[in-house]
Length: 94
Figure (tube, helix red, strand yellow):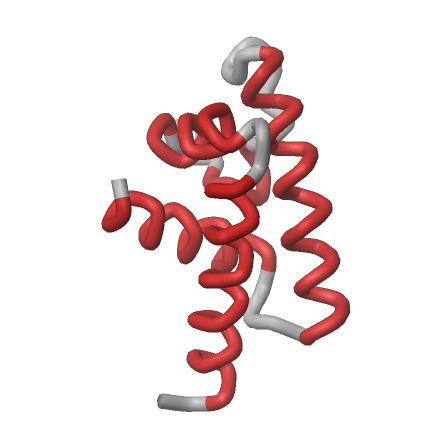
């Protein structure tokens, strides 16, 4: 496994654990179950009007900050890749 793959796996685990222990975890998990708007992806679809509920928007804003913090601190593999990695891991857990 490459260094980037190891960082992605480690950072995904950290973020999934934060999500699962957060008071807004149900809304956060719903964001990933729902997925981004069609043909937008997570990077461009997070601010799509009338797609997300208010609770999902709050959850997205919290997770957005976490992903950006890890991205800057650890120079991880990228914003959109991180959201897809979290989505994949959560779907295997739930």
